Image 1: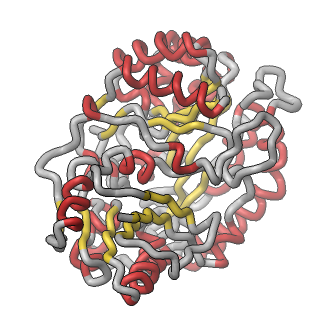
Image 2: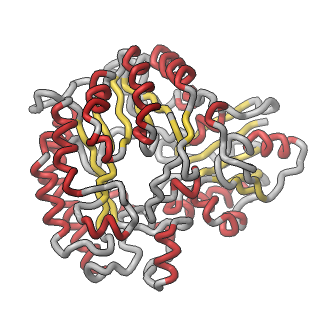
Image 3: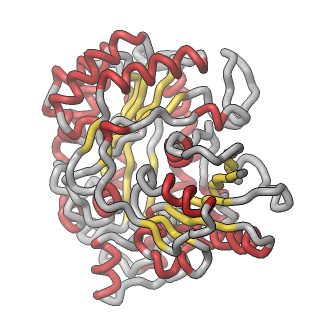
Length: 431
């Protein structure tokens, strides 16, 4: 039995123009899922369509496709092509979990929620020719049963030798520490998919996993893909104590309240942390309140960045525009904030508030009749899809586009130099 697992590519040329260049990194969805593949599967292959074309003529028995909202159109097209050849297709991912009725029209089976417990069942049912239309786990996955991701399936895309120019992916190994989030922000789909409570991997098994991958792929650069590594401070500190023994450089995502814990930030630096992604979301307190981002306090942002700078850790902020309650000068306020901290920021991720299906924001925008764009391909966080309150939709789109162009020309070059260690005394060249 031969299985292909496919990440669809984005075919929106306007969006691609807005994407800044840089290293491309894999998603962990399929390498983790592959670790739970039962016997009876002789061959399993991952295809990242952004890197290589799909060979629809290559013989395959079962195809799995993970679906993000803005990629759903392409995902459904891929499914249609395979099904026309008699190949069974399973669709999964957050978009499918939010809209299983829509997805089921394009697949032989849909997987709702986390896949570790249902993927083996899907495979066994397929082998018995008893594939069911819908699969859903009875409960959230127990992270104590987490298996190491099959990163070997990315071998064709990854770089192995220091200094090598081969490979489509950067030489970084990715790991997952926890799932779930209690903060329940209106725009975020994480809580719906992974639950409101943190679930953690066994630290000893996680450390062994990192150690093995570090040796196998000869890389010291490790990325942790969690939405918030600082979700449970006690666990995080134990994690830092153990990870500090591995002589690695690592990055991950933390919440802004880590700024209230200088000792932990110092431990992060001592353990090899070189950069952190932080969801600042907005420089507007009113905007944060509108999306239930209670944990963020704008007045503490400056101190947080300074704290990381003191510990030689670069910050990668995430900023959202178009929130209800934002002032008309939000773009100017944001630009000044970033300029004030330019030497401490590696790069910044920008987006327009987007009501993903399955979120409270989507339900509210739908109820208020404020959704102005129903084509999923525009839900890539770069297009205005709702009627904003701060300014007309056309103005928000224009100002966002202009800001992106301005930021790219005026600030990104310096930020990239910061990230690789030039002109910034504390930036590490290995990051």
